[in-house]
Length: 185
Image (tube, rainbow, N blue to C red; front, side, top):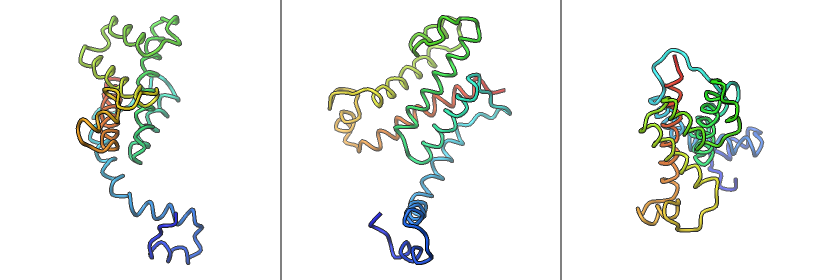
């Protein structure tokens, strides 16, 4: 907050609080990037008329917050929330079939069930499992430079970790939006 431009300082003279000045500065710096992120997400959106959320209110908010986090470049959160949406939606679909013993099943058990019911094909299964692996790299400690972790891929590909994180978030968003499309009418 100490690196305010002269434009920011001028705004401070308008009696904006320091917090509001910081947010205004952030908006000026990141607005175009957020628009670009939102345009990309919009390109994934189903062309069907109505979205459905079999997982109810929580699933809808997982979807909304995953999108919001992605637009604001909060990629760790968008990865986590995107897979939470997938898991919540699959769990609710399985539960609605009467398989209540899977009420608190983990995503691996749910995936076995939806495959056995022919609700997803092999490609969809592979995509969800890969997205789950990306999520696990966020949620669970990984030894530094272990194969597959952010740091490892950064060194291996000679890329910034942040760009790899964004790439992972894009992958998870594609998986989430594919499921949105499957459930839309």
